[in-house]
Length: 331
Image (cartoon, rainbow, N blue to C red; front, top):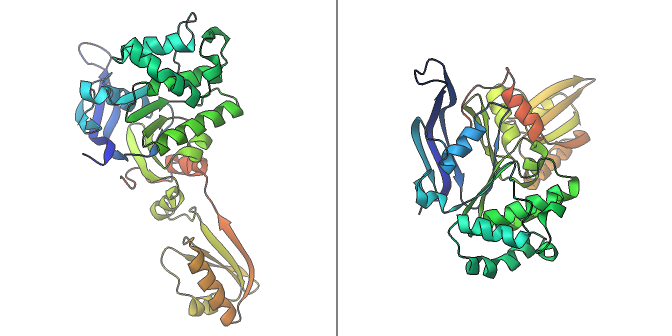
């Protein structure tokens, strides 16, 4: 059994607007990355980046032009792959005459479940998403947040291994967004893999373990949310990654004689006999060792501060003209 829920290898997709293919548009340009099982993984990118095309290929809605794509060890788009996916589209529309119970019977039938099977499962499922007291109420009375929770319920009704959620918190109020995040974390704890396609970066940062960033069909980054700032630093030479900054009352020569400064760390003179020392190492033991050495060598510590680059800042830096144009830690 593969350790990855999704694998894309040199994935390409080209659209043409006529039978003669006179005008072509390439939505995916050799994209390769993997989504490990058991993670919450975010797919990010501006409009036209290729996110929707990627999701449609995973679901079997669109055929790829080249490369390989696998879902849960099966060819993307195959029946065996589709049966292991639960999907929540961006704008799930349910007929207004339904209640939560009848809606789940309808969607359960689409997934090959009998009415009796749905009725066995729906009570616990509606409780999981916080709709147990609304089971027999008409969905025309539901708020958008309640409809989104019902959408999550239909996506997990057939107990899939992989959930693909398209903009799951878009347009929701803060409490509804928090509710959806909590459900996603519960599902992760149950061993589900959750693939989120979203443009709300703050939400992605709160729940995702890793992200992939696409721009104009090119993969710009794939890796953990935690390390994305350091990726920018290593690729662009700009000190934008997360880390610790020491403001010290000494000159550069004394600092370098006191501490072993690695190539990923920087020492910047700040005038008046002071320097700024930045390290991307965040472990407490290392920081304590630095403090002990500085004090042992009579270096006065003026200030110590921790820097964190938000996902939004990193996203904008990666897509800027100054950022690297390809690659990333493709895991």
